[in-house]
Length: 205
Figure 1 (cartoon, rainbow, N blue to C red):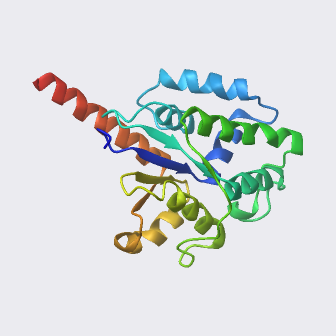
Figure 2 (cartoon, rainbow, N blue to C red):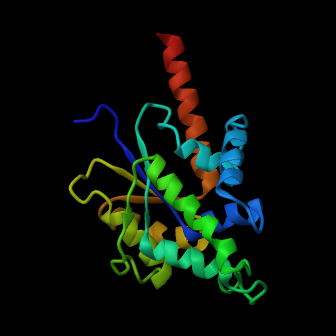
């Protein structure tokens, strides 16, 4: 049995698109890696690059973290990247990038998954749909399906979609396997609190 409870983290489509938007049209995977290195020096901030930087290290208590994703997430990211901007609601508006410009986003996802020893899950329908729509339900299905052999994993979905978080809050006690939704900012706050807890515990000893 592992000494620490491992984490499985599945970032939602909007997390990857936020990073891509910040990097800008025509970014390369090297640009992304450089932003991650720079983010490591800003350990107490909560932007999307600081979020990814924390996911590439063990949790402050030493627990391993795996970033996982799914075929549905990859396809949706590619679709949203090429979708025109300004299409009404945020859900209907994309980045307006070309096929070639969208490819580094896919490389970004594969890089994060590979670096943390995670997996890309095959498309397998939706979970918790309703109250979630099919897209959000597919993200949750991906998270639920990772490591089905073990109940030990702490499963986290990171999303900027507060409506998604609110929709599942009443259902939280009934979700099996247990899964937690939080924003990247909330994740970074969790990391800071755990760093402080580990530090104060070590000082006492």
